Image: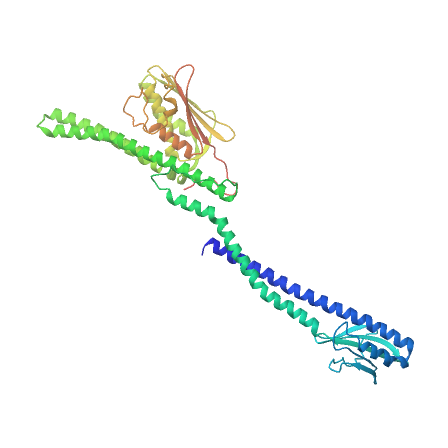
Length: 458
């Protein structure tokens, strides 16, 4: 069932209920008003006649009843009589108008007695020293006909009004939903090959306009993600093609003729190096594809100070062998909710870059501190620094600077950025005024959850 049809059904149901209640209320109010006017007129004439009879005595009663029975301005079938508990004194008018029987429980004040056929005003008075009642009534057929006429008119008009309103509601619902249909048609025309297309934003700033703007924003993100993935696939194919071509060529040359054991050993060594490069690239590509899911699942409270001390103990001998000074400044414990393996790789990658680009006799300084919400790791070296034109691109995948030794895949710093972002932080690089470069990593601090125990999130 379409939204348009559902809206129309809802509108028809609500409107039908409103019209029905309004019709019932109108009929009741009209009926009450008509009978109220008739009753008021009957009471007024009956009270006047009773007053005249009491002043004129019994001798004038019959004449007053006769004159009153001839009055037809209030309604047809006028009938008037005087009754007591024992007898009837005077009866004039239309015999088809049936008066109410004498009721000793009638109140001592004027009242209306009757139904939808006959209406009588009953006025108590003194007649021959006894309590008597003057009954003056008419037939109520005209009032009932008026009420029936109104009822029939409403029964005829209500379905017509309901149909017109529902039809108008159906048309208005279609007009209101037309912009959504346009959005649907434009979205249907957008495919994987034309993600640059955008929806037309309506000129009126309504809900559809906001929805269209959000969809366009989503399309922007999809286009950027698609472009990134295509570029990544192209770069990955390009990076894999070179070592595969070298490996294939080396093997073809080695198989082309008989070679000495030394030549075979050299060919196998070259093939082994290319295979290692391929394995390294494949490992880094696999890690990039799995990074977010693994980091979000395998996280726990981690002391960065202890992790830095452990890594420095491992990398320190390598720095000494290259005649470099490695110093670590971590005066206090800093805890994050992180994946130990990924954070270890981030720090090792940064130290590996610093070792590559720092000449002998240089130094590498690693510091750890924290502020209100972040842990900050800084890795600075005294190398040649990063070329200013290359600085904005060093975190791009497969990017290698002009000063790169050549054995890297260009994925190390990209991995560092993804790891930092997966831990609620980021990474930035800058050249130092004194020479060299510094990489600053920010990570979200660990915060205790008051509703849960502090346990590893496995």
